Image (cartoon, rainbow, N blue to C red):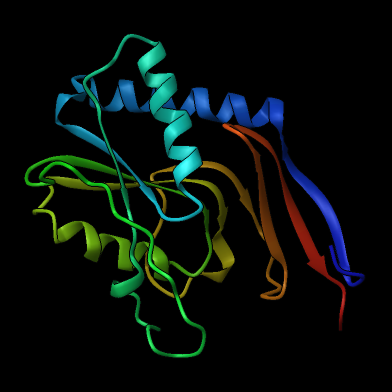
Length: 184
């Protein structure tokens, strides 16, 4: 953490586990028959959350939900501007045609990553429906008209220099921090 960052914990491990359980139960309730539903984790930071949700759904006896991981690097609108993005492999080993797709990411900020993830998912087929599940929604910084269908926590930070840090240890979420920039 930097000297100008004032850390504030948003989610501890216990709360994170409750959010994962709630997400799993909401998917079961909303989709009932999960055989036509797929959880797709957004590379790189949505993967661990997506895996945890899928594992919890499986522990509840629902083993028919599909799982994949998508890298949106080549679908980004800032590709070639600034830093180099090293793509990670996409592992969507099924057609998304007529499927209910749940995109999972850790933090929703501007909406640009989600927009590019939707474009990437469309290359695997035309889904019946696409929903968005995020651990943290930074709702006042949206640049695109994208809103999550499932939200763990919402923060109202208006400072674009604030940073949300999600810390994972192995497969268990440790905590989520808001690092507030105190520079004025």
